[in-house]
Length: 184
Image 1: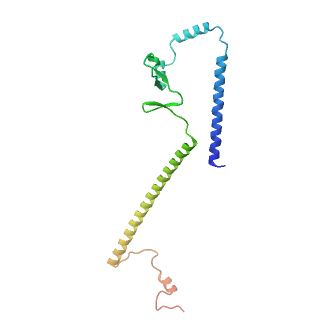
Image 2: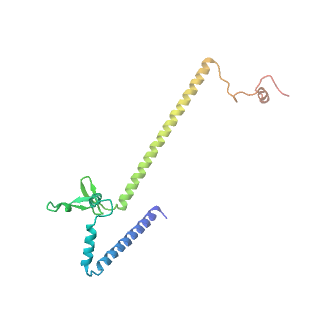
Image 3: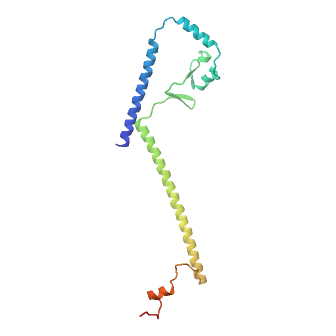
């Protein structure tokens, strides 16, 4: 299977999960609304007495309200507590204004992935060029040292002993390098 087909299958599964989750939430809401109202006077009284008691948690309701992002409501006559509403799930702050956003389309997502890929390729190319440049500088430095050593040897007429450079005399005779000696 290709990557694109894997991606579409994954998106299909995620979409299916979201729909199932939404349907489950919707059924819970419907059950709550369908519950018999009954005599609500006693329930309301019980909730009022529970609300009048101070909460056990350390955080106050004003702190909780401050943690939730809110949007100003454009109604100057609204009371102070109602001048702000919480952000909807599809809204976000962009600078000083609230904008609605939508999920990216496949084309936008692919173009973003391509941009990331090309940026990575450019980074890798630059790193490779830097490595090549360093290797070239190093080889030039070695060549310069070699040239200076050879020039010094030519000027002084001396060559330092290098092991493995010279043959043993027996090897030279065997190979016939030494003149005047012939083995018969």
